[in-house]
Image (cartoon, rainbow, N blue to C red; front, side, top):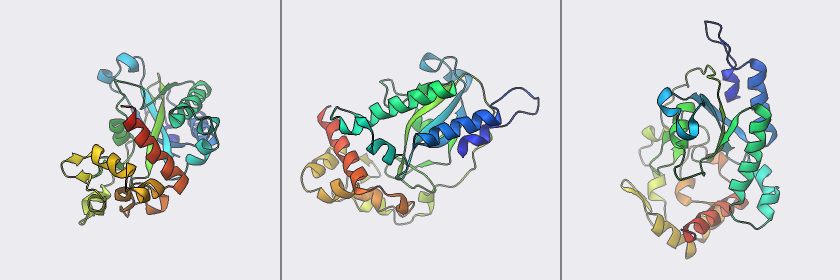
Amino acid sequence: MLTRRLARHDRHGTSGLSEDKAAQIDEAIDRVGLVPRGALRLDGAERRGALAGLATIVLIGMAGRRGWSAFAESAERRDGAPNPLDRWSRRVIEALAAECGGRALYPFDGPPYLPFQQWAMRAESVHVSPLGMLIHPEYGLWHSYRGALAFEEPFPIPAVESRASPCAACATQPCLSNCPVGAFSSTGYDVAACAEHLRGEGRECMARGCLARRACPIGAEFAPSEDQARFHMRAFLAAREGM
């Protein structure tokens, strides 16, 4: 697992994350149905405000359908209250933080919001896609970051394996041409056009997930189930209506 790479000491023998501790973090994240998404060290300039006193960030997320089943069976999914996925993530990751001796952080707390996208590009070989979201070399566009565990200890972290963005070798970029309303372009994302389509003629997007994302050949096997796709599309519309 990704965080097991943390289980090293530097050449001077200073204490870092022990092998047992790294295994504990991995196993704890796995146990709740989520996915370890890499780790990074904060530099001195970043360790202020909400991040004061923290040194190491371990990212936690979902990948493909992994992580969805645990949420789909949760009380938060069934209770009818707003923001069920965020509430479930908070409950589960707070418990992980208590178990592992860290502090829980979330991408949905704000403003100001923590720079999870920037952290992700330091922790894993992910790149910004033409759609603006991060693309993973294996999961494609079907992954997310639900939170992080932050530690005061400056754990040694090996360099991330550098992998080129799969978008760089994609000549046709079908993600940009397969949106029914052309909401994605080189100039950005037309959120209003997307939402209007989903409220009207966008039944296929609502049922199967964003057709622009589905057009990407990378990680196609990790595309969400229909239940998962419908949940996220409805959540997107609910967030728009609440603005």
